[in-house]
Amino acid sequence: MATKVLLYEDNAELRASLSSLIAFSEELELAAAFENCSGVLEHLRTYQPDIVLTDIDMPVVNGIKGLEMIRSVNPDLPVIMLTVFDDNQHILDAIMNGATGYILKQHLTTRLGNAISEALHGGAPMSPVVAQLVLKHISSRKDRKTRYALTLREKDILQSLTDGNSYKMIAANLGITQGTVCTHIKSIYEKLGVHSQAEAVSKTLKEGIL
Image 1 (tube, rainbow, N blue to C red):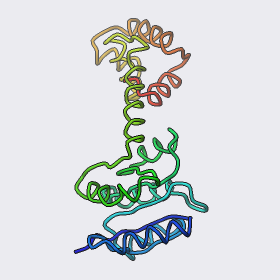
Image 2 (image 1 turned 180 degrees about the vertical axis):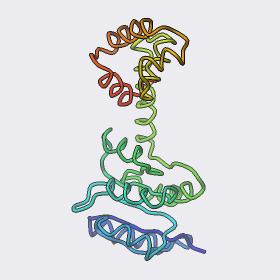
Image 3 (image 1 turned 180 degrees about the horizontal axis):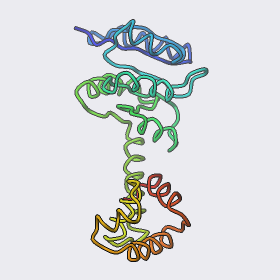
Image 4 (image 1 turned 135 degrees about the vertical axis):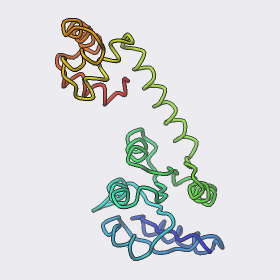
């Protein structure tokens, strides 16, 4: 049975070209193609696709918003993002919002078939430039973890703060006094360059410090 593909692309010529590419494949079947993701939830119910291909930069409802909507009802449906953008923010936004894979449009003719097959079998297809960016992002997160030079005890306390625990609870859980907790927290604030628990937690979550 052919794989049913739901396509979102606002460029009419490219949408037609991709539709033809999919239609001519014996392994694929074009369920439907649209110019943006405004009706994505209805489309999922109507067409029951096996995989979604979506551009990122589209009017009305773009691909990242469409991806969020898809994930709200189906966390497992493979979704491959198609775009001309190769900048950090678009790539990371798509991946962090649950994209299965990310293919630059200039690689579609050579990569699309294999990318769909890979995504359907649990893989995460990415154009080489995207894979390189993801690795750099992971590496930068690791650099942040070491840059602040937090001790193991400080990391334990910061984790406990991030979990929403009070100073009293942190002290009880770690078997230390509240005064010692305060001393460690003062050191944590200095190392992170923050002045409050809210700032420390926000920076920890945003930068993946732990």
